[in-house]
Length: 597
Image 1: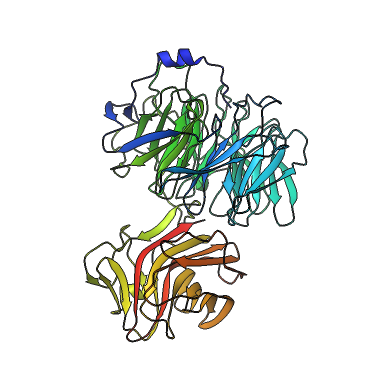
Image 2: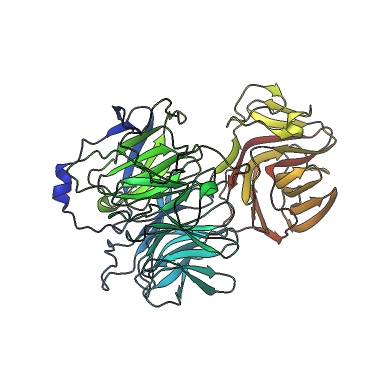
């Protein structure tokens, strides 16, 4: 962890002009200059509504951005006299702050935040050695003391079963908190004084974390089978190599920021061997300021297109690199000079890059305006950068797992239906092709920039995107008649005879499953819906928990789920829609999105 030991006046001497961004070949064979205002990335920032020194960020189901505001710069702790911190919520759709939550007396400062499946916000507080929770719906706080004294709970992640995982930065442990039983479990790393820092959950529910001590400098994994593995970044120790935050790319490989050495690292999971470093590659990014006191890679996140985004706090830059391991770094100046973008970088489901500017007391967002897909560099051998580990098996590989599990928050599929009139639904706005009945049944069509299904006499499925385990679908649509008809979403769909479905039928909101052609109702609650009126429905499966809510489109989304059920019949499948249509009835769909959880 870096500390505010470098005078800002010294940093200012080396800062480049406001919006200048440099893009360098990863192999050091050339350089060119671009500007943040030109096509590629546009970036802006805005002041916090209250408090100072923002840190971690996360997103809720509505796409709002939550920011931890500790009001201090831990080095490694804050003064005992520092007041409890704040947490703020920002709405990107209205470009405004929604609310600021003051942590109560008896609480400490939140550095990182994560949202669970019920919309609760979780945050470790290292200065009080406790885990906190905010329920935004009731505006209430709770906290639980971590069993190990002085553990320093640091970063946080929520697994597929709703359990809260955190690193214990002042000890050599990671922790798990079960909100259902309100009990803790702690797991020590084999390496002593490992100082765990960042933590993330992969698509298979394995827990990955960084070991931040430069004399250790390893990546940890706690598997679903209860095994704790450690992977070396380098076979020999290197001063300044302090892995910070950690992320999972769309192929399931692990990425992390490397602190003072000015690099980001990757672990190819298929090549990994516990106790050593096959599968590890490090990539050195260009430093734009020679008088800024060095480099410090901090935040890291991956977008759905496979670009790995990172921040450098000392250089006041953010940038990207293709997760294929081949291509170019693009590096951009933060909108405010000397702003110290630290651990607060995250990419939302629209591939916008959000990061906090700690010393400027701002939240920044970068929007990709015309970024081309990563292009491999061909016919060039590495020279001095990127620096790689000495293992002979660390050549970057773009090989994907046969069935990669997407990271939480990644958009799996989406369709705005904005295209020419046609028979069938064809290719969605995201470039994927609709499957199920939508690809071969004449009742499906595109008309007036909507997806329609009309004059059928059966149940029909439309699926889009890859298979997923934990996912949610949100769509908006209407029916011209609710008379032995319904419209809904499906998850873990295998075929027309095997799926989970959530739907409205004019009178009820229903959770249903169909197994080998036999359908059964899991939960039904009253929900009055009118013909010709657009409704939005959100259907989620997390582990074995199915949840649904519905509301009139254009009105505020309900805060709580309206119906939930538990079932473990299906483990994975496709996301989509399923409608019961009758002759003379038209179903009109205006938007569809599937997200990994």
